[in-house]
Length: 603
Image (cartoon, rainbow, N blue to C red; front, side):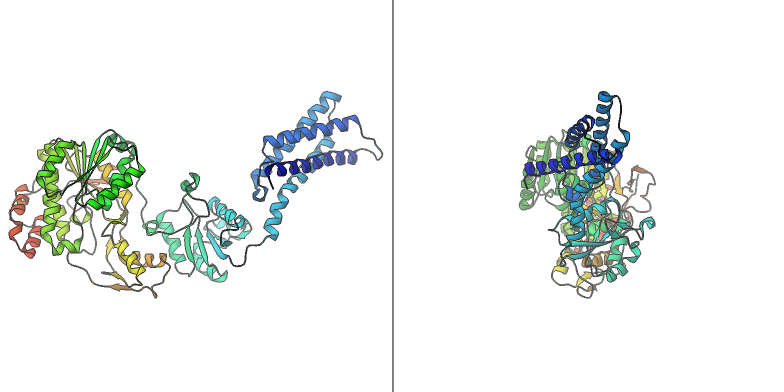
């Protein structure tokens, strides 16, 4: 039905209701045989016109009444009440009297019939139009405003293949009640029993305010069942129109990590970046590219992408040009091991800030190729740092790793020595040099998550080195924002560390990924392969002698690591090519762990 036809039909129905109400009220109160008076006619016309005026004002003719709720009822109440008041005022003006009893009865009948005419379609729809029997029986976790919003959408959207049958909520005051016609059957602890009893095929988590620890608890209960578990979209995404309420998404492993994202100083980062020339090394990598994406949000004067791999740099460049057409962007294809090229680029570009993300980071590969780790992680860092100092760069931020703490691997050792180079440069240069350490980054190249996903897609098994191995995890965007934040906090020589919460067992991560992928451990088994060379059972973010209790920003700590005689690093750089792989590995571990006799710890 077109809007015009619908409008005429509603106005006709309302007119019949309004006139019927006032005439019925009039004859209820007056004796039988009373004739129609002038007052009755005037009152009827006034009520009719004022009703249509207020109905238009409160948009009663524009409501979709199949979705009517308390708000629509309030609108009807206001329109009817004000119509009655106007009628009473007209009566008083014309006859100096108000027929209070007649108007009171008219008001009650008016509310009843107008409300009934509007809500009857919804009542019919909810009572007689049953969901299709082939829809999946769905359990809603959360009986709050978000949960009821989800249920309303599912009940009124015939295209969605989900049929909500019950709520679960930890609020005991809601237990044994019905909300939106669905029973609230208990708390999280009864999920498994409810799924079995109600033959649930789908579970929707509809609690936007959930903390990660709480979501973990809920998911662990859901994982005991065979029902598919999904989560409603973020409220902010719904509000800005990115998704609709019923566009549920799978629970991601990022959702289950037991730590809350750290809110950083966005205004401070903007002041640090805006209007400045920024250069990022390793800009084609997972961390470097995300650093570039984050930088674009803060209005840099120019962003320079420096990387060795032309394909990855080209891919990031095209993405940024497409998403930020006004961004002043340029690229440099260069290897950080090319010292002369680094000096040429720095002096030509004159960046205000350098984010140094270029590094070799694969632990097993660097164990087999320690000389390449030295070339890239130590010599490359030294080249870029000295070139930055020579060009008068204001701040140099090096991206380090938790594997640099008490390192047991070649990769961790070279990153620790690179930190030493950075700290020495801060002592001899006007440029502020700092490092940022964080744990494993979800989704980065070399991360365990993509490997597990690939193994699951291939039918398993999922390989875990040891059942007790634990790691810290954070998302790529959060890691990248921490790198930017470090630049704003830098005084020189610091190592910044994020409070990453509790470490996560790798085997638990594997189990969650298997469940999230729709499988059981019986279908995708987990195999323990043993620890690889250079691996630790657990990682640290600061050594015992590095810990400073005070936070420089909420959940961000500053460590002051012991200094080392830079001559030792210089000697390593001059001699490493003459050493065998095993000799070089031992040399790196000795330097990084301060075991060499000629190390002179200072500062």
